[in-house]
Image 1 (cartoon, rainbow over the protein chains, first blue to last red):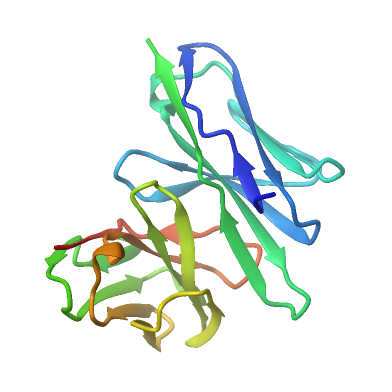
Image 2: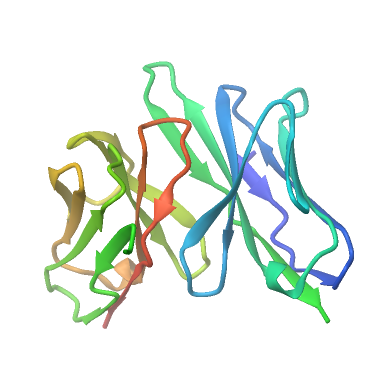
Length: 113
Length: 113
């Protein structure tokens, strides 16, 4: 099983719809989780951190399920500008206290007018 | 002011050459990273420095050598370039090592011919 897995998509969603996608991780030592968005030919940008209690930022909601080892991202009332690739990032603290940072391969989202 | 800057933005060179990419951050962060994003868009960490100390050194050919003259700069030198080195290289910084958000530079698109 890969350390971090995402459905590559693409998800083609009409404007205004709600879309959700998950990211699963295999290492139970994973401690920190983030969602980044990457536009075509641009750098990744932090969308939101994912907290144990779940968190919301406007139309975006992130959830963490430690028991099932996945994080999710929900986008409500989707806009054309939400079209991008969404990258899941997991930070693992190793036995020797070093960090291991793993990016998922991303989920492509296309919002259709 | 650009928070994380990289030079050059584009680099086209021939196999066997040696080249360097420079990165600077003006965010006052302690930790900097180099990532490689290949043609399949998979973003993989290569190195990380914290206060000029190497803390992450993934399995990368030793033709790649990072150098951090101070905590605001992290350069990447590549010897004997190969076709497979063609990719986009992103520099990033974060306030500290571990569970912090990362800020990415615009990327350097390296093409080896």
